Structures are given as C-alpha cells and as structure tokens.
Length: 81
Image (tube, rainbow, N blue to C red):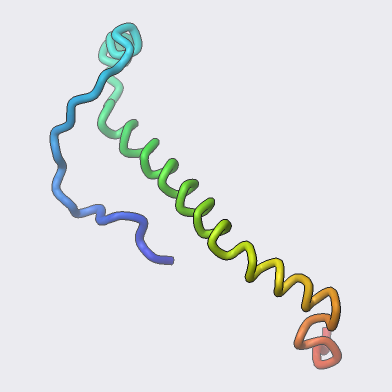
C-alpha cells in the first residue's frame, strides 16, 4: 500500500483555535496535543481519500458487478475448490 504521507517531513508550527477548557484539561493530564492532532488528521485523510477513491471508481465497480451478474466470474468452471 502506498504511503499516506511523508512521515519524515519536518514539523511545522501551526496556530490553532481550541476550546479553552479542553486545552486546560488536556494540559493538566499531560496530553500530547500535537500527537493527538496528527493521529486525527491521519484518520481523516484515510477516510477522505478512501471516499474519493470509491467515488472515482464507482462506475467501474458497478460495471464489473453487472458483468459478474450476467456471465459469472472469469474463473468459474476452472476452480478446483
């Protein structure tokens, strides 16, 4: 599987706006906010890229499924299991 992003890319400081109570509680519990953000971004990117791929390939998958419904799988009759 191809890499989602360049994990060795340098870190870049970023300004964010966060609910002050969430931020205070996270700091009090020693939560690594940068790591949490990166993890959430990775999951969001995975989902968005997956959704985009499914949308881009929807027509091809529908066409393939119709072909399978009409004539079956290419290996039908050749399988030994």
